[in-house]
Every structure is written in structure tokens, then in C-alpha cells.
Length: 375
Image (cartoon, rainbow, N blue to C red; front, side, top):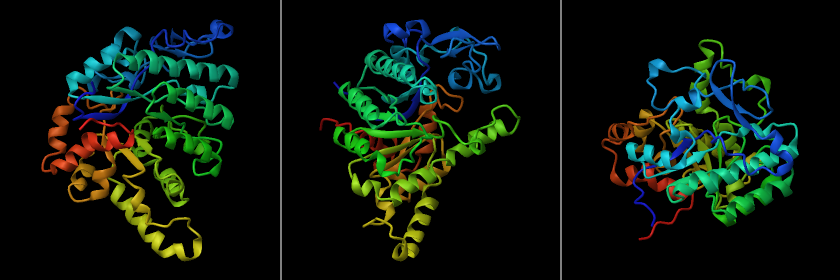
């Protein structure tokens, strides 16, 4: 029986469990990724047999007070089991008053590995563990987003997409940086498969792929290490605007695209600019749109939001915000609302009409991920 979906977190995370890659083919078992001790004393995933350069830390901070945060250096024993165990993840959701969660994997290094045969095998093993082990704790409440190989040829991309669709995946995670921009018609066969399967496509801020040097986040220099956390909340507008203005959702009206962890306070200004420039420039530019760009926001394009006070305030009067924003807790990352989401929700939704409150807390997520709830 499906749960009563009142609160859905559309941006949860995990770190793969120690046995996550046991499904690798025999020929790769001697190269199997492993959790190893890093130079800083913490544990982290090694995909090349060498000690990890980045160990558990800001990606697994749930349960640790802000004043004790550190970039890395945590061992597996120091992080919550909900990071890697589906049943424990569900218990932490219960503490937080969350009925279901969209779960993002962590093994995005597969997008940039040089040995592509090995990378694809690791990706498939990670996807199987995510869907068959972690989410199997309760697939009505845990909606994992498997990875798909966007830079390995269309045949590989379609094959893995169809494979995880057959396993019941409600969406897939794309790397933010890809060889072909996502508005390129190259991807049309992929969008067709997702549309027909009722699966959403998602990016998560700037996670995944090979960023140009100008966009590499400095995680070391004091000041810029935090600045990157801030401005990545605004990173997805070029991508989303290109998808809309090139007519992607006009060609694929059933396609849903989710921008993870970007909040929503910027949406009114964004749609204002899209509308103004559509009106001013459409007569000469050949924009392949038959309707105003705003029509696709909240119908095809969705975004996840945390404690965005500006965004929730705007949602009271701005219909587009209310129909496109989806609540999230970002468990177990360093900006997580866990375990105080109920308190945050009470404050954020004060004075919000009940229909808009439900939409942001659960309804929009049900639409975005094609989840049908019995009447």
C-alpha cells in the first residue's frame, strides 16, 4: 500500500554501502571500488585502488552540530547508517516527518573514468544496488535516481535507461556537464524513452561530468569554499532556459526535468525575463515555441527547495513558484534540514493556502515523478 504522501523530500542523498559493487562482473572483481582510509584519517570511496582524496564529511553531516562541521575526515562508523542503509534511511525520514524521498547516488565519478568499459560496469552495479537493495527497503517511499551514461553513445544510454526503467525507476540522474548540451536534438531518442516510461530527468546543481576550468569550485580557499555553496543555487538557469527556448518540451510535452537543490526564490525574476525577451525577440529569432515559455515551468520543469524563505513567501502570490517548487531536506548533506523539517515546514508554510502548501510539500513531486495515488 502506498503511504499517505503529505511530505516528500525531493533531494535526499546517500553514500554507497561497502557491498554496493559486489555485483560487478568477475573480470572486474579485483578492481572493485572499496571504502578505504584516507590521508586525513577519514573513510571514503576509492575507485582506482589508491587512498581516497576526499573522505566522508560535508556529504554525510546529518546529526552533527554546525559548529563541529568539517569538510572531510569522518569514518564510516561516525556517519549515520541512514547514509548507506535503506531501512535506516526510512527511520530517519520517520523522525523528520517525511513520507517519501527522492534519493541521489554519490558515485558520479563513473562519468569521468577513463576506462569506459569498467566505468559502465561500475555504473550498472551502483544502479542495481540503489534500486534492488537500498530502495527495496520500501520502494513506495524511496525513489532512487540511477545514473545513465550520456557520453558513451546513444545505444548505451538507451540500454541503461530502459534497463533501470524495467526495475521501476521513477527518474534518472544526468551529469551536469556532458559532451552534448542537453538542448541538442541528439538526445531526442532518450527524451522519447523517458517520456514514454513516465520517468523524470534530473540534474543536481553542478554535480557530475567535466566542468571547464572556469567553473571548477575551489573547495579549499577560505571564503570561496563557501561562496561556491551559495552561487550553485543559481547555476541551473542557463540549462533550463535553453531547454525551454529550444522547444524541447513542445516536442516532448510529457517530459519532466528536475533541477535539484537550487531553491525557488529566483523563479519570478527568471520567468519575467523569459517572457520579456520572448515577446521582444520572437519576431526575428525563429524561437521554436508556439506558447509562452512560462507555460512549461511547473508543467515540465521543476526545482527542489530547502528553507528558502524568499521562495515560500513568493509562493503565496506567485502561481508559477507554487506549481514548480518541491520541498526537500537534503539529508544527509551539510545544509540538511534534518531532523527539524517539521519545524521548518511550520515556519515556511505559515499563511500559505492549503492547496499551495500541499503542492510544494508533495503534490508537485507526485506530478514530476509520475506517481499515481489512489483516490
